[in-house]
Image 1 (cartoon, rainbow, N blue to C red):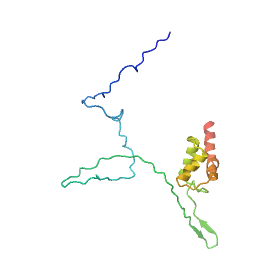
Image 2: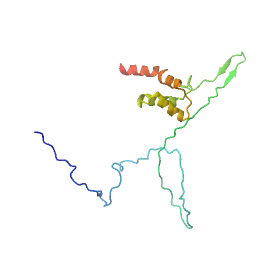
Image 3: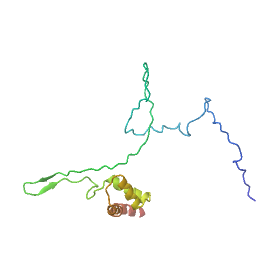
Image 4: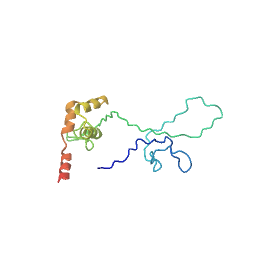
Length: 165
């Protein structure tokens, strides 16, 4: 017959927090003394906020207390590439070329990678992805979205084949 240990649920729990060596209660989360959680965050914007009450005379400024909020900006970012073209004396023309990765594309690299990530990794369906992109201000049709998901992925297939060898 197997031996079962007694349940620990019946024991009463102490609501008191343990005290550390200095005699103060330990209110920090476990592991917080190991590293600064915000040490490596890049700050993109600083906002100075003044107290919303009237400050009395003789008050002296002592500095700031920093409070860091992480936010994600999702907004459309449309770029118009103005490709310069020149006519040569012989009548032919020379035109500038688009940056790498944009030739024949009307959607940027980050947008295309986001679409592929959402569809393949997060398993977001095409109708939901289309709705989300349109809500964010991206002008895309269902056919264009389908082509982004299904066409011109030979580099991915080559990489997959190399991994499977």
